[in-house]
Amino acid sequence: MNLLIKNIKQLVTVHSNGMPFKSGKEMRDLGVIENATILIENGLFKWIGRNAEFTQTVNENIDIIDASDLIGLPGFVDSHTHLLFAGTREDEFALRVEGKTYEEIAQAGGGILSTVQATRTATKKELKKLARRHLDTMLTEGTTTVEIKSGYGLNEKDEIKMLEAINDLTEECLMGIVPTFLGAHAIPPEFKNNSNGYVDLICTRMLPYIAQRKLAKFCDAFCDQEYFSVEQCRRIFKTAKPLGMNLKIHADQLTQIGASKLAAEMGALSADHLEQIDEAGIAALKQSGTIATVLPGVSFFLHCNYPPARKIIDNDIPLAIASNFNPGSCMSYSMSIMMTIACTQMSMTSEEAITASTLNGAAALGLSEVIGSVEVGKQADIVLYDIPSYQYLAYHFGTNHVAKVIKHGTYLDF
Ligand code: NIG
Image (cartoon, rainbow, N blue to C red; front, side, top):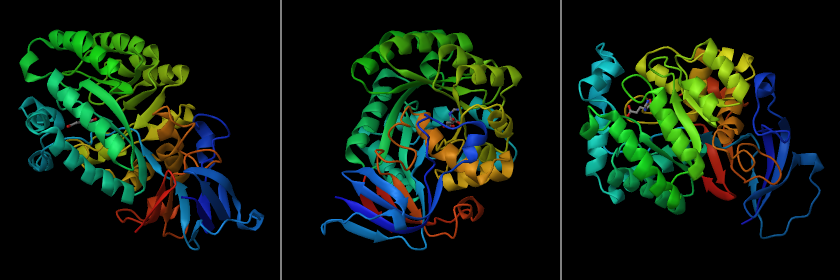
């Protein structure tokens, strides 16, 4: 189906200038076109420009959207989520409100391991049904591509079950989905006093099988005290890389043990979290070109310190924003709320937050040649908002302003 969108009041293209991402001051350059027209053919952007410059005659089978009064942005690319899970943890939310920390709750047997229990019990079909509901809502809120991690199985059978479910969803849903293997998310109860034994299992059995079946594009690991050490993560990454998997890492979230330096050393595509990143970590990321992915919803939800986004951007490190949707540390996938938090709590500008949630999110998934900006030849993922200007999006938070979503040329009206 071909589509002509005309009279877009303001079109935020986040044009990439042929680069895979934006960093430093470039993050503020959104390539805005006032009174714009877009032609979409075969799921791709075919023509983009000002209304007055569009002189082509279109054939009568084309669908036409009049977007007067609407603002267009690239679909959000949410590059870090744990969206596939069973069970919820509102009991932990109540404990935290009363003063318990995320770490204390995990040590008492809650946290990730409680979701592991529920997810192991659920069938693949049940997990997919739960995830589909989230994916459908995310699309209506402007997210058109999402990464989903395994990591609530923590044994061969259930990690594979999770990855198969994620891969099935890729086929069955309109949403763009990128699967990540996160076997090293927590030490499973069966290996409580033998974390090296679990790392052995990941390296000798899980990774080769997952790579052979191409079940995951990325290998991720939670590198932190009480989880996986730098040495253990290095071993996992050294196994995953030659198997053709790209790397991501949960770095510097709860404590500082040198995880972002490991990300740089191993050439990880992104280092995510960074609440505790230090000067050495910033210097390492700057050198390696690793994308710093910040998750504003986590600091907000857990009431802990924010990653130093301003400093990361000012050091010219490409920065992406993701939701980290999961039942423990951020029970929200609203990328526009993530942008608001990034602006109010992390001193990012609206323009930086938009770039971080679109083009740079795509770069954190190795997909910025295909998605993340409105440019001729790219996949037609565009969201039209009923707002007066693009700055309004982060400003008027907590309300869904989406009017229409176009994913790969397919049009959803709300
Ligand atoms: O990114 N840090 C590890 N994983 C998630 C939390 C997952 C959970 O609590 O279930 C995170 O914050």
